[in-house]
Length: 207
Image (tube, rainbow, N blue to C red; front, top):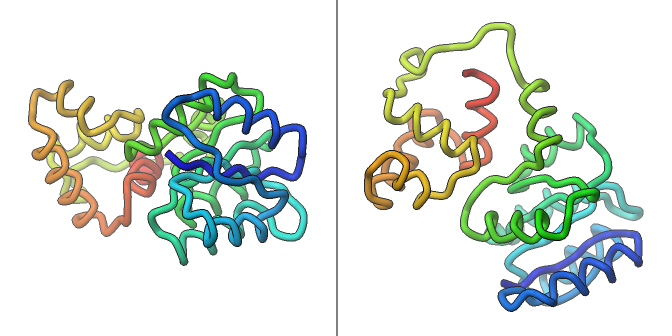
């Protein structure tokens, strides 16, 4: 997978580049010091994934994500940040980021997160996931029936929220991967959601 790194700290950029290039299935195709440069490199290098810092000069990671997703819908974005900031997290999810991990995470966690996102999963570091859950919880939860969701669909939503891939969901619920994909498509259509990220947030907000 082709990875682009965007961070305004040169030491962090170089360190991440060195770590990722040790992995046989990863190639760092470029590094950027701000969101504007990151967008230019996306056009030039066509990465599969962007490892994106949130707070950068010239253009921050959230705005860069918005513009990247508008122009290159196939590029997946993992936010790497030291800031557990509610506003940034909401905006990042709104604009389509596939996940967040903290910069304090181990290299193994960052690498595994990139691989999970490449496989189509939504990834949140434990600290981020806990905060996100608290942040979006309503005082009142709803039942699956209220939004037209069957019990099986509800179970699949819970698995997606837990970060499971389609294969892992299929194994856990004893069904084929194709059946899981069909279920997910039906759920997204019923709830008028765009992707797994929005589905995970909907689940945490309402159930």
